Length: 187
Image 1 (cartoon, one colour):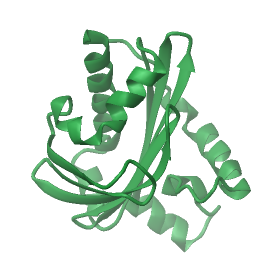
Image 2 (tube, rainbow, N blue to C red):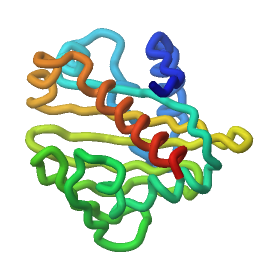
Image 3 (cartoon, rainbow, N blue to C red):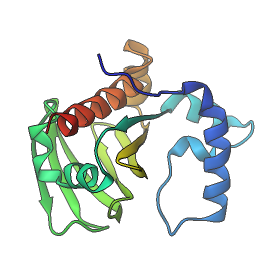
Image 4 (cartoon, rainbow, N blue to C red):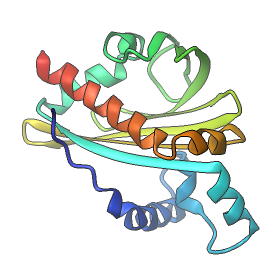
């Protein structure tokens, strides 16, 4: 079984850092919805109930260019992500381009919000009563790459999904990272 660093105890610290970055601004890049929670209010109670955020990371024994090539080749995702049946990128790989895909029987329409080669890629989307923000960050560490994925889900379906499996988002993110790692390290 592959070993990887996952530090869920850092969540509060990460949120504080994300809040600072959010307040400073980063070129309009959407952030995980959890990063901008108010201190204590009715909206906090609503957000706690309807928003789920996950963040996980892994070290991949491959150079950053190879990791970027695999993750940014969006139409090839079904080759290494078995939950994705089909993907169509409606244009060039750049912010604003639409991604149409089918995953786990759902038709998803997303829009790229960030494309920074060898560094970051992210998209937003709507599917079946949920709004998602998904961000990937890649950091070169010699001949290896630290891959970080963060996602937030909001909407009426989110609490129902959490009811059936409180850790579904973390499980999904971890599984995707492991698939990426296996794909790249087997080549």
